[in-house]
Image (tube, rainbow, N blue to C red):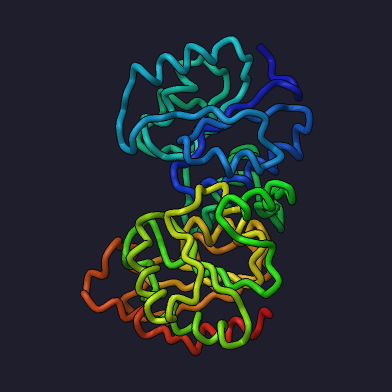
Length: 341
């Protein structure tokens, strides 16, 4: 069957929140080329609030399979249910072998993705990655929207999330907050990947103390895993911040971040969300690198000490000292904030 401009397109999305945000670059490019083609996305259930705020997406199809698990029966049943949908092309964004199973079993005629884990039999529009030619993750996503080896546009579209003011007001009410009357500093002290990406909580607390003295309200955002860091920040600031860690859904965190006057974050999913909301943003890099997954915004200050041992891309500091973040001082962050606000 020949592909038509309005034939639906299937995306197998990434698992990580930050990667899902960056994948919107591909969705935008596909939509620009095929404005009448509906785009559906298969991804883990936690991606739902992101995709609900991406105007390019028609349907979100949750894939509730634990990270790293094959679960062939579940994938086969989902693929079988998709066969009648009429998808003519699928884009497989994760590089794993298992991620290519569903479009293959769903008999989608064109299946595009990077070679990854020996997927020649599952993908039939296979791309071979030259990392030096495409150093950024968004470039690797974007390249899939074009024919093999085609040059990328000089500028790529950035992620952008829709925000509904009525929904934001409802979120404020749900978490017990009033509409802000003061500027908001949002601190995001977590990073799902591991402690080597997390600026120390006591440094976050010093930034919070200074901005509280300047008349800001300070909100702490993150998952239950950040509650220990939040408790440390609260103790140092005499309980003057609003601790929202573990108390919001991801959807609510997006709504609250949309109200922030300034965001300070590690390299994390919330960092990419803040960038997509075009919030003024200071990002702290330790074990990772802005040379691969930078925040896509023109309202950002990136801080990194560029030590010889970084970026190591490890979950924990292999040298045991975490100097790349410990030695990054609150004064440097406050200076960066001053440049943005």
